[in-house]
Amino acid sequence: MITLVRRVTAVCLLGTALTACAATVHQAPRVARPVPSATTAPPTLAPGPGGLTPVFRNGSRAHGRTVALTFDADMTADQGARAAAGEHFDNPGLISALRALKVPATVFMTGRWAEEYPDQARSIGRDPLFEVANHSYSHYAFTDDCYGLPTVSADRMRADVERAYAAFRKAGVPDARPYFRFPGGCYDRRALQELTPAGVTAVQWDVVSGDAFATDAEAVARQVLEGVRPGSVVVMHCTRSAAPTTERVVREVVPRLRARGFRFVKVSELIGS
Image 1: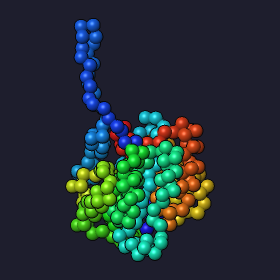
Image 2: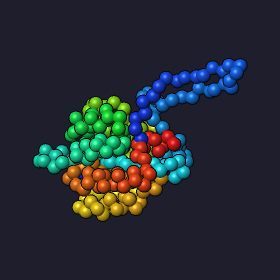
Image 3: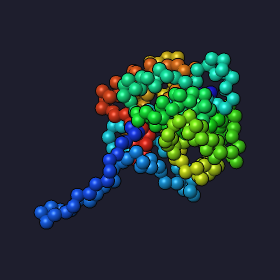
């Protein structure tokens, strides 16, 4: 299920080989610099105080007009029967719109979603326009009292995250990012502590789209346009049944933000900058 968020909180880079220019008696030497490559580890944040899992909310406000659109592909562990009955937790139209508009994006996917839609998960994960990140396996909450979600016990939190990565690999996603979004955006110190061994960076947001359960695409688009600043991370959803307006919102928001000089990036680019 998609939950309302609590905290109103890029482009796979193809690399080239490292090169170096030799100095000559007529030239000052130039230092070889590493170039991002397909095998370069994605950027992460250093652990927080006490070694806790770091939390990223937005990029630099001073490094250009960049914005990351992120989409939560939500499906809880117990919603299989609803999917079998015809409920759509996917949104292929949204993914097609992002491709048509050439918008890089980060998809925070639950392991259960990847199991239900392995062909779509693999297609997204192998498209250099996108990157797949972790939204847990179960979409159960990592704190108590998180919008009515069932709760993962502390001793199962890391296992839930690792199970999602296993589901991505099984679906054929080749390179899921070491980024994690808490279901419902709910976390506390205990959750950050339990996930420290997983080596992930928790990714929140600074712009909430309000697309969950929304029926007015114009209102959602307006909220996004009013909230975006340089370096913003926008949270949206990739689930037709509970966020039916998102494709329309994207088609409205993207050209208007581009007209304002914004460039769309993945979360990894914001973290790396």
